[in-house]
Length: 152
Picture 1 (cartoon, rainbow, N blue to C red):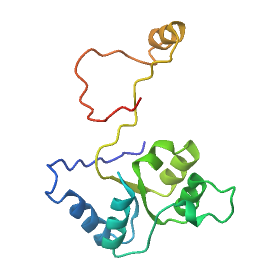
Picture 2: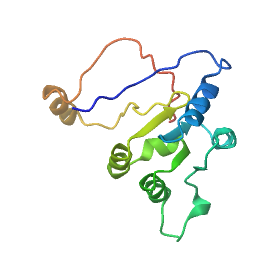
Picture 3: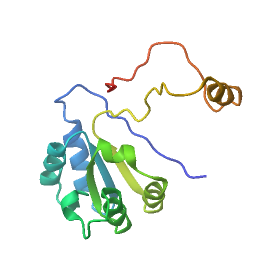
């Protein structure tokens, strides 16, 4: 069974968390990294600070009009590239992309919190009962610790 190591660097803004991540990447040139940040401006900041060639899967890099952003992400990952992208890209990764990342032994650096699970109000009562009764989902009463903003 493979073990996954998770390191959490938790501190207030401006205390050097991103600088720590950039130094980690620069100090480990043989490692594969996916850096996930909230904005395109942060992508640029990381790209300018990292000592190696980095890639952002962007629309302007399409080799043909049918190629999607996710297709470009997969090509970069298959080529063992250091990739800098936004939280939105992480949210839309498909299982093929995740398999590539796992096979290539990528290290994920998640700069800032993103909310990958959101409440869904459109579920039918029978479907909910089926999921709940078969222990697919659990219901927990209490305060949510997630600081994400839900749109809609």
